[in-house]
Length: 141
Figure (cartoon, rainbow, N blue to C red):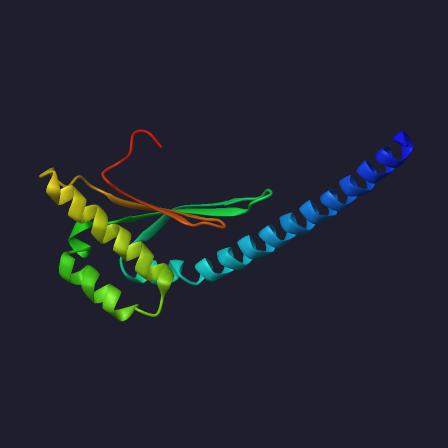
């Protein structure tokens, strides 16, 4: 009886290992596909005035691409951001970057703080992309 239970547990363990391996491979493939898509976005961001200052690839169970861009506040007025958003309605990636920039500026205005240089945009591409916008040089990252 105990041998049957051991055998059943071993078989179940093997099935779980195979499924976990397949899930891991699928996640890697999706991550790399997402990274490839974003690689076409970064040159467009540079055209709009965001210069790439650092670029990093993280390889692991969940691969990621981290890119930092800097820009000048004068290049991103409300009107300019609206124009960029209107031009890129069909690009969710570009729209998400400029919507985040716009929202950051709007929140910053609400606290009546002085704009500090530079404008920094950090983008982390992985299965769930993350966009951070900094006004001024961050001390804690």
